[in-house]
Amino acid sequence: MARAARVSVATPRLVAAAAGEVWRADRLGTVVAAAYQIVGAGAALGVVAAGKLTFDALLAPEQAALGLTPALFLLAFATALSGAVGPLQTQQHRLLGERVSQRVWDRLLDTTARADLVTYESSGFATTLERIQQNALTRPFAVTTSLLGLTGSLLGVVTLSAALIGVEPLLVPILLAAGLPAVLLSRWASRSEFAFAHRLTALFRRRNYLRQLLTQRPYAAELRAFEAAGPLRARHQELNDEVAAALRTQVRRRQLIAALTTAGVAVALTAALLAIIELVRRGRISLAEAGAAAIAVRLLSGQLSTMFGAIGGLLESAPFLADLERFVASGPPAPPRGRKRPLREGVALTGVGFRYPGQERPAVDDVDLKIGAGEVVALVGENGSGKTTLAKIVAGLYQPDAGTRSWDGTDAPAPDVRASTTVIFQDFVRYQLSLRDNIVISDGGGDADPGRVADAADRAGVLPAARRLPDGLDTMLGRDLDEGVDLSGGQWQRVALARALYRDTDLVVLDEPAAALDPRAEHELFADVRAMLGGRAALLISHRFSSTRLADRIYVMDAGRVVESGTHDELMARAGQYAELYRLQSSAYH
View 1 (cartoon, rainbow, N blue to C red):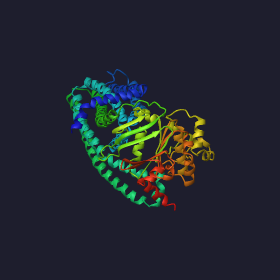
View 2: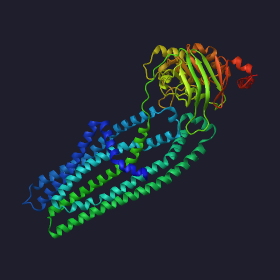
View 3: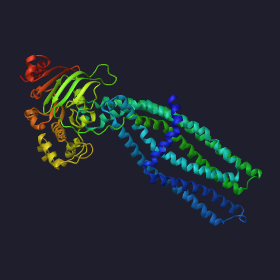
View 4: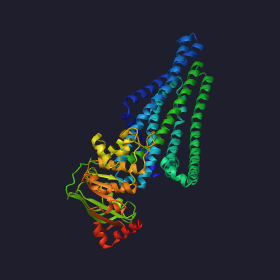
């Protein structure tokens, strides 16, 4: 209730902000849309005036200002103009709504781009983002339509009320009496609609996820192998039933509100028409004036319905606009663009700790780690030991809660660390773009350098496969968006490696870079890893000890802490956890 009260108080501000968004999105389009509203209001007034002239010509030709034929022509023209404005307004609103939608999407994308990785990965952020996408993003268009409708209907109400006052002032307050209950009912609809959307966001997210599993290509093979489509369809149906039941209740509530609003307007219209009959019976107005008044009452009733509907639309959109404004306002300021730094001495973590929001146990606890310039350092450990989290700290994607991260002996800002580091994770992205774009995307939008592209593809071992593709490096990859060419898992892995090598930084973080490679390809990749890296420093995360044994130094993690470090020979001589894991893995080959 408190939030609803705050939104009600802030509604004028939110509506004004929405109007500003519309104006900034397309100034000329807004002016054109407003012009159509003015023409529509003028056409409605013209219908009333022409109707009065027509009735005068029919009922009292000797007193008529115009003959019947000119009056009928004027009535036909005003009616035609009034009818033609509607389709023009609809198409203009369509265009203006698209421009407003683009602008609001830009604001949303700016906010999500500014969010740090910890925030972006939190469930609260994901739920809010889903609710915004499903509900708030369409509201600026609704507000656009409501504002323009309100503008036109207000002009119509003012002009028609003036015409009606000239006939009989008593008729205007009778029609306006329907306004108060309509506005109150609109506020009720606003609160109920926002509560409904807030309550069903989680259901929508789960249902959308199941739809992705059941329709998208990456999941098709496993679902068929496990015959899992049936159970997932059953879960999807359960969610459908829950959504339908909740929607049914909400629709009945909105139908009740609409019926009450319609009934109020109908009562007011009936009362006004009965008043006209009574006024004619008493001789207070002539039949011509009664005919014109009847037309004005009907048109005014329609304008009032439009106005009340527009007010209702604004009130209904206000909570969702407030939700969008809170989300945008909660986003951090745009981080400064990082400055790429050379790595002359190395990167060092000292006493670093990190805890995910809402978690009691730290993911990384009191870790010391050093990567010298040009060194290849390996990070090993069992699943869940904190390797990937530590790699994200090294790369500047996470800011440590405790300890320090230094670059060449200084505390470099996180944006500088990110700009100076290349990261390829195990779950790397398979971009549905050309092979060339898949490689150069790592360079932050810079112009593609053909020589560097070919060199990175060659060192990653993807160039032979590229030569066999229909359009070489310009071949579209993937089949989700275009009829491109799909690659094997190992070939995609090499594309990701080429992406890492194309980005010109002195530190590379590779999380399971050989996970999808066959033994021969893995051996070729790591036989001369330093040549592949071109002298860059690297942090290598791998479960395959045949890959890590060639590192200058190996760190062993367990439960978020570094429990051992040293060269392969030193760790084997200690006969600790590394040696145990190495022997367990190597015994599988004997």
